[in-house]
Length: 316
Ligand code: SF4
Image (tube, rainbow, N blue to C red):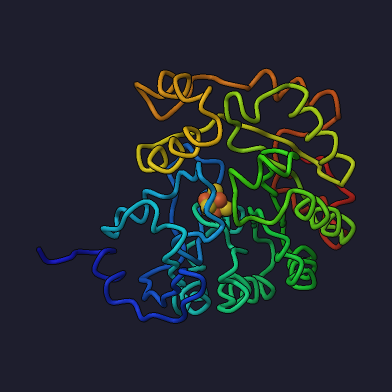
């Protein structure tokens, strides 16, 4: 059968490097900016890589490798760097209104190990350094973001920039099982603190909150307090979204490490990949305890122009 669309692009991609069983490819991309649905809190996304070596067992984005006619487990071993990312962005940025929110790293981590060698995220930030009045958010689990601290500072001087760190748990052992190749939670918190000290608005999302694993009120409370003490201005958490492609990787982990939870998960996710309504009140209660906001700063350039934006928070 002839391969079509993204599967054909993947099959034609040039092998860049292979390491510890991870293979890196250069992928021809037609565009770098993607329009989101009106339900999302941002209008555009940028994901410089397809696949993510950090390999979180629960990762919902595994299905994107299935589009390329690969297995969900290939998601962390076959990494595609989008070619000419900066050129594409320069060409496409004219379509974006200044107040529209551009989110970097919504499907794969922009600071995964591949970024050390291929620098696609950095090349994108170099485009935004020359912009004024843009609204930009970055989501990551990696302290590699500190490599770009000076660039981020420069962007934040002329644009609304915020950085979200994803931290599901402070427990190192649980984190190692769930997020085997991601930097330790303590390293993420240290990076968050450095960004805050540099005047960049930062927050933490405990996504995904996992029943029986990371959803205890004391656990989330400690996480929120630690994040606040490190400089986080907002805190959020939503339940695990467990698509069939993620189930293929997540359920075997449960069977191996947390067998007592398997029946509960099978029941919870029997009918849908979504969990109804979970954790809204719990997370709101915890937020209130520590004076944290629900999300990043709003687009109010008139209030911060020429100022360090971190000093002007909160601006919902
Ligand atoms: S860091 Fe994010 S994108 Fe990468 S594997 Fe983990 S959840 Fe998926």
